Length: 147
Length: 389
Image 1 (cartoon, helix red, strand yellow):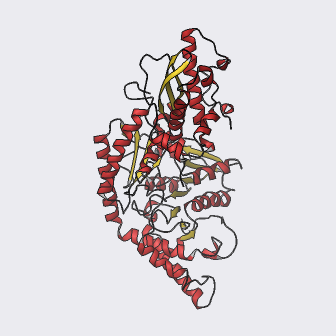
Image 2 (cartoon, each protein chain N blue to C red):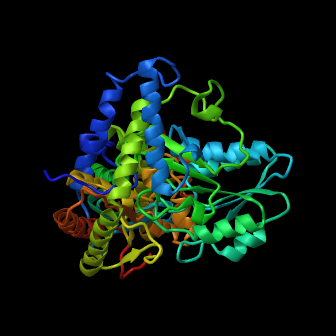
Image 3 (cartoon, rainbow over the protein chains, first blue to last red):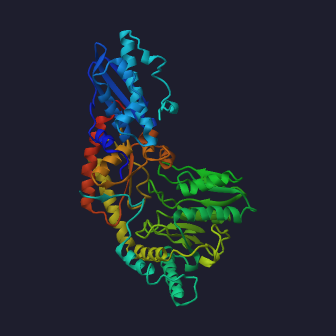
């Protein structure tokens, strides 16, 4: 009997893409230590394709696993494809999270959007997937969780 | 893989002597203690013996010990029993912000039914302030309830002084001694205690059995209604093997008290010293002077408790955390909040509780693993000592 499935545990115990990219094309931070989790993500973008992504996360097992999985999912994707990734997609890729931990996947989903938003701002680009996105929106927006 | 259990405040394994004492009462001596034939009376005698064993550990008269289902029932019984028995005298209860949820949620329930509850805060040492307690007393106060030893930070409250204040004002004094029993000296007479909650599974006895000490003469209503068991105070056929086990565990706790306290406190101090020596940015929470002998509550800055707990578990080590992320309510520890610890640091707090079966080798292994795990998680964390929070 385990709290998390094997895939979540693997991404938690052996997280992929940990670190910070030097001179990133975009960076984003979401959450806060007070809320229990905070993810920072940096990305490299080449010709609208995310060529690298690294993360650092303060948080519980599922927050770290979601961060790790999210970076794996966006590397090699175009910006539009990355923006289309929902927190539910991250949960599905992880093979599921306990209901009470679903908000951890929102953390990763929002952090990715924050990093792309930063990239878009710096490069004067607009993406349909960022429409209405506010990087400073409330951390604990429960409605953002897609069950 | 090595297994190291450092969560003795959560529960303890049943000692062999305790189990051996219990076993005949499942099969051979199974008689209902209320029956007046031979095997029933044998059961009744065995319960009397167990009651004497528990009473001796706390310097009570056996007739003042009432067996029930454990700490939670004892706390509920004390609060609701006094609230009902003294409802004509008043509707005010004084307790603390750091009580167990069995007490806090019982008080919150009463607040919905017209009772007023004062929740006393604690100082940086984890103890309540006696002048604040005395100032909170009104002519409507019917109960003062302060836990003897806190379950998270292990702080021992000034029980004898609280007992004296309660007596001076003619108010019933209850203490939740679930974590204290067998770990700190308890003398209900000397400490001026009117009601006291106890649990068996924290002292190497079975789960599902505990007792409420009710000083002779204290007016308290029943909580469970039914048959005439426990001198008509607590209905329900007695948990015979549980009671026998609790009695034996209490007897052993009394016999081994000095050795137990020495063993636990030495290993606890060793654990804290080694952690502080080897891992930077660690804080000890709560008083070291007034502390449960086996309790170490530590904050590891810049990382989160559930993540540490999972990695320790993968190495066979069992501890607990005050982090919200490990609780089903997602609320951080109310005890650490009352102590004034910033929320982000509460998330990174672990509780280690040492017991009779802990060895020095266990502690060495835990410190080794902790050192590695804290390093790994700090490497992943988005906050650190350079950046700060």
